[in-house]
Image 1 (cartoon, one colour):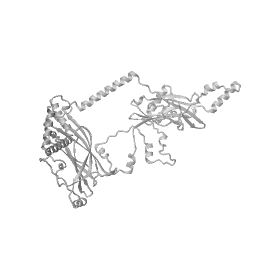
Image 2 (image 1 turned 120 degrees about the horizontal axis):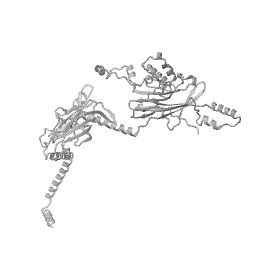
Image 3 (image 1 turned 135 degrees about the vertical axis):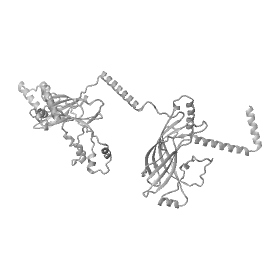
Image 4 (image 1 turned 45 degrees about the vertical axis):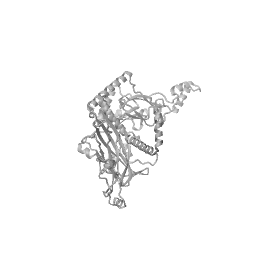
Length: 563
């Protein structure tokens, strides 16, 4: 059965956590005997036998079904990572100490002298170029980006082909130099070209073959790449081509004074770790991770910061995401947080802020300004909350303003958001409004010279904390609905009552229960108000009924109660 060639010579990528020094690849190189050699052997067999029959047994044993003939041109070598195997040219070059100029050349000279003491080099045709050798595969310079025959390489392609992705020298810069190089305000074209190059540190190794005739070994034109191996610091291994495995061998055609065909295979023969060694490695890693965990614990400390006894600590990590559908552009948001009774915050914390100005863009037929402005608040609810009180929750007040080219600002809207009362992620959208005046004069003033009616107290959006009356009247106050603002909140609650099993926990738990119930307070009050109105209407209806009907109804109820 004829042998099939492996046509897949592309790159393949592996990832390994093991040390790359354990990598081993067996390379087997064989010359395929030409048809003329087979014919010549058949003719010799016929002359020796004196007959016209072909000795198929001899032919099959010498040539084989795969087409190659074992002999001096067969070679098999096991190569480890960055193992240096000298070619015939390098062997003759580095034997002469006078030709060695660099430290690497002198090191190679010592290696060759040591090889000669042990009987010379064992390899004939297969050799390697390591990461330290002055060799670059010509295919790296000839890689095309498109399929066009008229393609001309760009500046970037030429620089990427010439770059040697090796271990980079870590040159330290002084503080002033590092600060000056952070941002280049006026980069030149040459600076942009030179810095638009990926220079990832990669180690490379080439497995080569000298496919010249027996008397012409050591010529550069006879060197051919069998396999290219690249490894980066992340454990990514790139092979070109891949190991053959169960696939057929690769073929390599050489054009010389006569056409020659070679076959070679690549096999992964790295040693598998033994069971006891694997267990020892797992124990070693476990011990290493345990020591690292202890080191991190020592850095952090064992004292976990807890809130005061009987208090609830609330962390709010918020974000002003975007503003939608406002009249003018260049929007920014000014916001602050109001703490109700029994709430407090650290003295160093700022409870107000302002976003950057942002231009609007059209998204799904809406004018949207994306702020993505983060903020964070830390608050404490003290234990002074009475059992009959429902604690109020902090409120975030904000106003949206616009700023034009002439530095004229306008109020685009006011709004408020009650901070989330439960821990977790919350996405909230708040509608806004702005005060307006009667007539067109105020709108003309707003358009031409800027400015608009404003609130002296932004908390007037809701019921101000300074209001002491029973009813807040907004009769005659004219407003206009504007846009909306989107918020994202991440809320965290912390309290000792979540851990302590004592009366303090029961007391604080009652507060927390009331906090949870306060989120439904408005809906419950609306239901109770509806019940009260229905009861009053029923009372009025009963008063309007005749007295004889009322007496009959009372006697009926009395009979039912006695029964």
